[in-house]
Image (cartoon, rainbow, N blue to C red; front, side, top):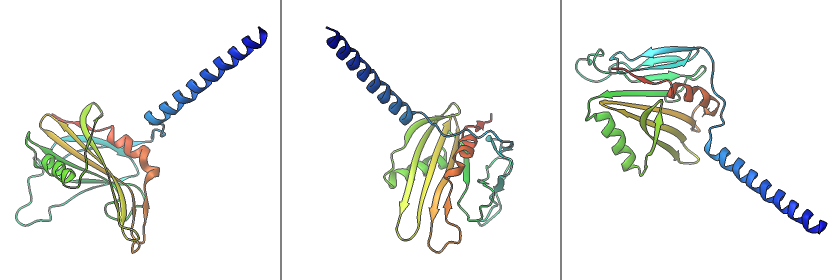
Length: 199
């Protein structure tokens, strides 16, 4: 009888242990366990007052200038493309890029979605700071030549479209700077989740 009781106790203990391990594994797969960035930040407000965003104080912010033909657009009504550059980065494209568009039928919105469709990417629905959004991870591999991984978010709210990209890593054999930005994920998540759309 005692032997049967011990066997039953061991079986129960084993089952509980397996359940605990399975639960821990599921949580690890579904919860973002990356550290949160808690440093000093600055706030950027878009010139057309479409959005504002916070970013680490030691990052550089660059607003794209008009490079096309004809008169430049009115930047009080048209958003500039903004690049948030981590310290020490010199290569173009290795930063957080933000593009904004206003209008219920936004050219930016259709351009991004058409590009994803043409390249075979299916966006995943998500939410960013309470706003509806779509996410696509793009990977380009042309070994031994150029390789890169981008994280792309399309935030859509009423008549506003915001497109945010972060280049996680980039490699090119001719480059002096091959980029691994995975250490900047906490800062990127901070930037992403600080986005506020303005009325």
